[in-house]
Length: 281
Image (tube, rainbow, N blue to C red; front, side, top):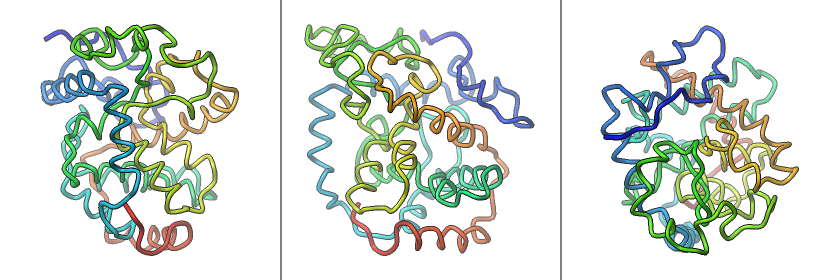
């Protein structure tokens, strides 16, 4: 199996005192590598412009389920992310780990704490019957040539039909220079779904929160330095927020799982403040 060689640029965001850098986002070795590679191979084969547009239509009406945010968190008890080389425990624990890391570092930004809890809730799409390759993992723009910092870039796109389509196979593909990421069609997954769901349900969070949710898995951009040719000044102004969030999304992962029962009352208070009640998913 051919894999991408080299260290991951996201390591530069590791907070002091965490695990050794090489123990995170290792896509060259490890016990979970075969599972991770298989997930990305399917993703990079089937995530096309047509596929993404169909998913926007399919899920854009938010008719899958009605439930509260905390009920969605509880659904993640049953999900282990097959694209994640770092952990093999349910995603609900990761939500609280991320939120608590942010809370410790930014005690005055309660909305930011809530972003930590919310950021992966779009993965409930797996419970709606979606395969993991269309829900989890790093995101990338469709409709233009993949850039080299995309995970397994050199060995997983060969069977994607867009790679041979003259409309989509160039550096800019179907986009204009510096068109802005809001005008870029990203690979379908939990980021875009959750961003759209938050807009649909009118979450009363600041713009930075929506932006971090939408692009937190876009590692080729926020850590790899690629796709800058598509960015607007607004994207570059938001980049530090995404990079700050990435510290806690990535480097709070630990087998020492939090006592969720102790944390729930605080996060329920934030849900009641910013996104209360029964929501459409």
